[in-house]
Image (tube, rainbow, N blue to C red):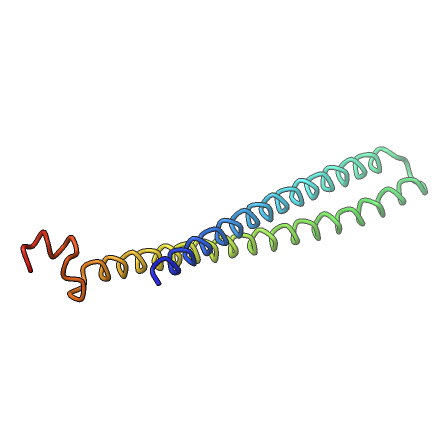
Length: 134
C-alpha cells in the first residue's frame, strides 16, 4: 500500500509540475499580450502625432478615428492581460497547494511504511533486533 501511495504521490507531483509549466506558459502569454497592448499604445500615439501635424481635413479626422479605435483595442488588450495574469497567479497557487498535498501524502506513505516495518507483528525486524527484544 505504501508503494501505491508513493506512486500516487509521485504522479501527483508530476501533475503539479505540469500545471506549473502550464501556468508559466499562461504568464508568458500574458506578457505577450501586455507587449501587444504596449505596441498598440505606441501606434495610437504615432497616429495622434500624425493627426496633430495635419491641417484641417479628412486625413486628420480619419487618423483621429483610427487612433480612437486603437486606443479602445489597447485598453481591451490591457484588461485581458491583467485578467490572464490574475488567473495565471491563481493557477500557480493551486499548483503549489497540490504540490504541498503530494508532499504530505508522500510523508504519510513513508510513515506508514516505517510503521509496517517496525510493527510488533514482525518480531524479527531490524527495530526489534536492535532493541534486544525476542
